[in-house]
Every structure is written in C-alpha cells, then in structure tokens.
Image 1 (cartoon, helix red, strand yellow):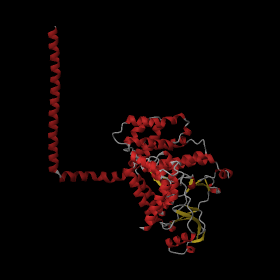
Image 2 (cartoon, helix red, strand yellow):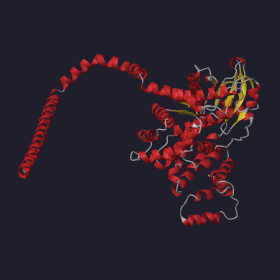
Image 3 (cartoon, one colour):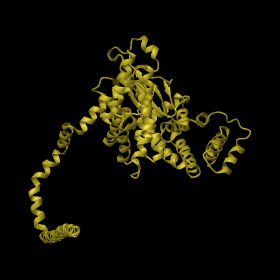
Image 4 (cartoon, rainbow, N blue to C red):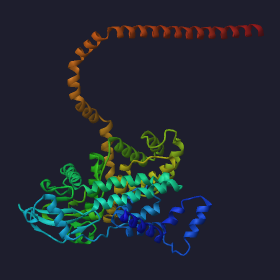
Length: 518
C-alpha cells in the first residue's frame, strides 16, 4: 500500500510537471472547467505541443508506460493524428539489468548451473528493452544461440501500473467529452493483453515456429529456430542469427546488397503473411529486421522478436481485399457498403453519406502516381473517417494498418521508387480468384468430403428411423399442411374472383359512360 501510494504520488507529480491535466481539461466544453484549465496553467511553461508533452511524460514514468505509449500509437483510429505521430517516436532507452541476475534467472528456470547448459555465455547483453534482454551463448553440442531473459520482478510492477492505468482510464471515460469515443478502458485492456503475451516467452517461441513453418517455401526470409528443450516462460533459447540491421543502408550497399530488391522482397513477405496465411509479424520495425551477409544466405532478410503477431480471419481478408480493389477502381459506394456489410458500421448508416466522406478522403490520392500512394495511409484515413459514423474498427485491422505503415516507410526509405500497389495487386487478385473461382469450390468439397462420406450411407437408415418413430407427428403435420394449402387456395380464388369482378366492373362503367355520351 505504501509503495502504491508513493507510485501514485509520483504519477501525479509527472502529470502536473508536463501539463497533462491541462491536456485532459481541454477536452471539456464546460465553461467552468475551461476556466479551471486556464487557472492551473498559470506559472507553468506549457508551450510544447501536447503530443510531445505526453511522450515525455510517459518516458519519465518508466518502461511500462513507454510500452503503453507504443501500443497507444498503433490506435490511430482512436488517437488524434498529432498525438499518434508523436507517440510513434517513443524509443525504449532502458539500461540492461545486471548479468548476475540474468544468470540466476536462467539457472532457476532450468534447475541446473549455467555451465551445464552452455559452454560459453557472454555476460554483456547485445540488446536490452523494457521486457527482456538478450545474451549470446553456445550450447554443449556447439550450436550458437541467443538467450532472451525476462526482466526480474516484472509481473508485480506490471500489475501495479496496469491497475493505475485502469483507474485513470475510468476517470477519462467518465469525465472527458471524447472519453467514450476514445475508449480508454478498452485500449488499456488491449495493452494488458499485448503485455502479458510478451511476458510469456513460450508463446513468442510458438509464434516464431509458426512463421518459420509458413515462410520456409519462399526462400526470402530467415526466422530463427527455437530450441524447445531450452524454452521456458521467462527464458527463450533460439538460433543465433548473423546479420546487419536493415537501417544501416550504407554498410549493406558497400557489401554489395541489392537494396531495391530487399525492399521489394520485404513487401512480398508481408503480403504473403497477410493474404495467404492470415498470420503476420506485427512488430516489423527496423530494429527487428536484419539482412544476412553470410555466403549461403546473402541478401536475405532476417526477422526477429515475435512477441506481437496479428491474425486475420477469411472475413477480415475479404474486407481488406475488396476495400483495396474498390479503392483503386474509385468505387467509393462499394467501400461504404463493405463497412456496413461487415457489421462495423451501424445498419442505419446512410450509404450515400458514408460514400461522400470516403470520396473526400480517397480522391486526392488519385492525383499522384500509383507508386506514391500509401496503402497504410489510405487505411488509416478510412478508419479516421469512419469514426464519425460510429464504425467499430477491429483491433487486428488496426494492428495490420500500423504494420503496413512501418513496412511502407521502411520500403520507401530503402527504395524511393517502390510501387507498393504493383506488389500488392497480384496477392489481392489471386486471393479474390481463390474465393470465387472453381478452385475454392473444389477446396470446400474436399474439406466437406469426410462428412459427406459418413453421412450419405446413413441417410436411408436415419430416414427409416424418423418415419418409424414419428408417424403421429407426421400425420398431424401432413394434415396441417393440407389445411394450410386449402386456405391458400381459397385465398387465391378470392383474389382471382375479386380481380375478375373489378375488371368487369370497369368494363361495365366504361360501356355505361360511352353509351351515355353517345
């Protein structure tokens, strides 16, 4: 309780220090609260942009809040653009924890001394973040590995800070004008899920294994092999990858790497994971991507850190494929209809109004060459436009949009002439063909064949049993059907007689009028 009190007091101090109270009060329309905002701003230097102040406050509050800011930056459908852009610049400048603590964690996880696990273990970590740090080592069979170790004592710290976040989110939702729209409690719950997923290193290892299995036939990307005998919830041992960070472009170019080809292959990998597998690496920033310079795998991409992955259902993929296809055909009405058909826009939404809003967002892009069109930005603009129509954007699509923006930014940094649409179009066309073509019908028939093979021979027996067990019910049902048919026949006869009588009456009236006039 004492620690929680001091932690809460420190958070209050940071809020006041960076003027976050003024930021929250600015969301109210109440004149008294507006006056209070001006009063509390007296004597404080709050000239810095609100996004910058929020970012600096999160950095001051520590690693968990930094991680929260990073997740928050992905919710561009909820955040104002200036705040989302600023939060996207958050960097984890976390010093490593002592190597002795890492060794103790490893020995506790495996129940044996470090020397019985590794013949060599580098005490100095090669990478350190808010959740874990990585050491290089060598197993007794000679395999070189990377050992990822969770920071000690993370669980109680996380639970304490998450509790405070939930409390603050409840205040914002109840008091702020935009509170319900921004859904702060939902955002905190989403962060809670991401954070606990990252704390389970076995889960991360399983994500890596799935991606490695999916991508092994492409020969475009290297994903480290997981050594399952040495994987625990707080320690992960994987194949050591040797590569150069993709951000070191000059070094790669000097080594003879074809940079434009690497950019195209990176985009191909992403769209393959999205539209073929529906399972994609959702944390593909430059720090997690390297390029191999080894002779056997020269120029191939290396993917690292699989704590966050995205999954898409066939419905999600169909929504994306049809949206992109309709966008490039300028069929904005179809884009609007897709929002309603997907159930994300309320059924009472006026298609013409949503169509007009989407047209206003998308039409300016067609003044540019296709290579200059950002698919991630188009998706983000659609999400932001949909906000005023109460569209419920699915978290997995927001995660996809965030990753797509990362891929686009990195790809165009490597190759300014990269045409993302020309790379994405074949995937979209192939996916659409698979959904409506004979191949899709054949796949469905093969999938259902075991059920048909079991059901068809049993049909005669099932029909015999049904008829034998329910003769009374069937007789009553047949009688009710006959009675209903008789009522229908009488109704039809009445309609026919009435129609004939009406026509005859009209003819008689016409004849009477003509005779009278004549």
